[in-house]
Image (cartoon, rainbow, N blue to C red; front, side):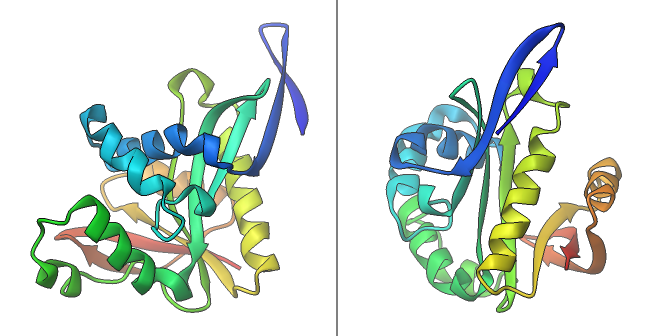
Length: 188
């Protein structure tokens, strides 16, 4: 917990593991990170309620301000990627041809703690909440025995890449994911 002030108003921020009641902000985070409409909220709430999907509340870290959820980071051990992806796709995109999933690169791998999706409510951005979520996730990954934390950044978002580099992430490759190119970044 920490306190910070905005325009002389004190707020208390807490970074913590998600609880089942946090599912709505977890679902919102996924939709926001994927640039999808919130019209799909019910389907995503159902998937995020399942403990065995990538976007499960069990894989989520929450930022609260004055006990109200304002942001979320979804992260998990890369060794679970294949099982989580299969369950996630069947719950969210059941009508998708399975070969698409099989022919798509892997975002996460054995030995890494993968930072999948993050979003902060607009009115709470630029306050250091994202960095706090990432630092919490990084420590969680280290504590679980992962060698490093990793994430993908769209090659068309150089400012976002630069932001992650200020936190200590370094580029270690590129990959195509669903036909789009990303930087792979990691922090040890």
